[in-house]
Length: 319
Image (cartoon, rainbow, N blue to C red; front, top):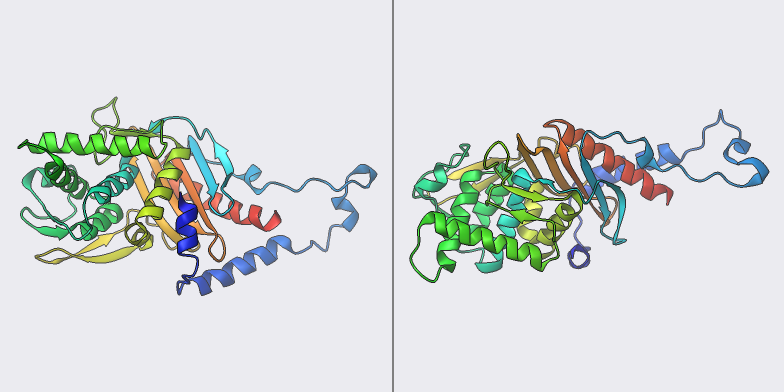
């Protein structure tokens, strides 16, 4: 999946690399520097056999029910906790909403915001009749986690795919069906979508379900296939144009500047899901790592992910 994306974009060096490169170098120096108060013989076990290296993940304490850390460059997990447990996905769902829309329509397609979209839970500043380029609306929907945007996309794309005239509700159902087909196609066998936003259907049924492992692969797919869309989710704010006015998208990940060399990010939170977060970051020069956290708290998802990021960096330094 994302290996191909990594190869295609390995020449890109963003300006923030220089700050984070210095920070990471300092971090690696600190964790690798010898402790002058500990005799060198203390690192050897009885009989002169070198003691096994400490795993930085062993000291990580998580609020999350499930988590997964995937080394894209090596093609293997670095850490897993209940990675196959099926849990509510919340707004992380919108990763597949965007990927499905882009699988059918050019990003230059115009999407009109209708009244049904505006009735979706939350108010992200969209207005009835406003027209957006699909690429801008998807960026806005992902960054702002706009339910209005997700519904507008699903009803518009579903309506275009329909073979006959149908209601908005039928168009949305058709689109969600395509989300599930794409999920199966890329091997996400435990992932299931019931709506396009991830909002809970009621007090017992979530709008979507997945696992920490499959959520990581979902973001990997988005970055591989549509990097120009998903890479924009690394910004704390982004100004995007509708046909009537510009809209400022404010990232629901309030810690975008905390993560070193962030590549992409998507949050999720509902009563049933708790706090979810999936991010991709660069562990060095073009060494992408994906961290997925499901079933945490509204604040704990960020501290969980940050702890896993720094544990991953320490692990890579020692191995």
